[in-house]
Length: 420
Image 1 (cartoon, rainbow, N blue to C red):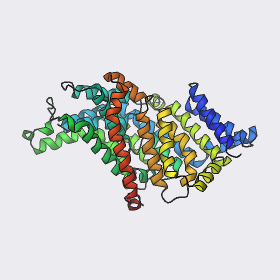
Image 2: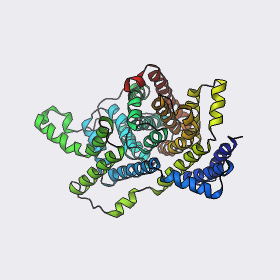
Image 3: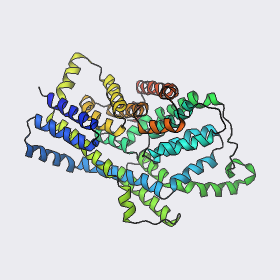
C-alpha cells in the first residue's frame, strides 16, 4: 500500500526521538526511510532531499528562522528585553496588569526555556506578600505565556506553521487576534480576578503620579519606551504592510543593533552574530522541510486523506486531535508543527479556509505544548514554585478550554470571511 512508507517513516521519527536524538536527525532519517520505501533509490533520495532543501520556499523559511532567532537573541543581548520589563512595571501600577503582560512579553521575546524561569521569578516577586498556592502562581506564569505567543509575527513557530501551510503569517495573526484577546480575558477571569489584587505597593513610576506634570510624563514615556521600537516596528510592518517578513525582521534587527551600539554602548561584532544563530534550531527546520518535501513528493499521505473523506470522517476533528496529541507527547511546538503539517496539509491545501485551519492547528499545538507534563517551561515553572502537576492543571485547564471553545465560535461566526 502507498501509505505504508509514510507510516514506517513516522514510526522511525518517533523511535529515534525516543532515543534522545535531535528532531532534525529524526526527521531526516524518517524522510529517507519513507523515500526508500516508496521506491526511490539512494541517489534519487539524495537528489530529492537536495531539491527540497534548496527550493525557494525552503530557503525563505530557513532565512526567516535565522532572522527570528537573531532578533530574539539581540533583544536579550543588548539588554532591551530587561528594560522593556522594567518599563511595564513603571507604566502599569496594577499588579493584575503586570502579571498578565510580563510573562507574555518575555514569551514574545525570549524563546528559550530560561524565559519561563525569568517570568516565574518576577511573578514570585509581585505576589510575595500574597498567601497564594503554588498551583495558582504556576498557572498564571504559563497561561499568559500562551496568550503572549499566539500573535507574535517574529516567533519561529508561527513563521513555520504559516510557511508550511502556504498562507500569509499576517492572515494567521489576524485570525487569532480575537482568540488572543479572549485568552487574556479568560486568564484574568479564571486566574487573577479571584485574587482581588490592587495597585503594587512598591510602585513608584513617574507615570502613576499626577504631580509629575504632563511634560515630565511625556519625557519619561519616551525615555522608557525606546526599547520597544524594534518590537513595534516589526509588528507594524508585518500587520499593516505587504512588505516581506524577511525584510521586516531585518529592519528590526538593524534597529536593535543601532540602539544597542548607539544608546546602550554595547559592543557588536561577528561573534555576536554567530552566538545568535541557533544551529540546533536550524537543523530542526532543515529536518522539517525535508520530511514534508518527501511526504509530498511520494504522495504517501493521499490515500489516507481519500479514505477518511470517503467514510465521512470530520477533518476538523483531526486538526484538533493530531496537533494536540503530538504536542502533549513531544512537548515541542516546532516538532508538532513539523510532523503534523505534512500529514494534515492534504486535507485543506486547496481550501479557501486554509488560513483558518492553519491558525487552529497552531492554537492547538501551542495549547498542547503548555499542557504537556514533559514541557520544559512547565517543568521549570512547577519546580520553581514547588507545584504539583494536578494543582497546575486545575488552574491552567479552565482558561485553555474556554479559549479553544472561543476559537471554534470565532470560526463559526465568520471572522475568517471578514479578513479575507
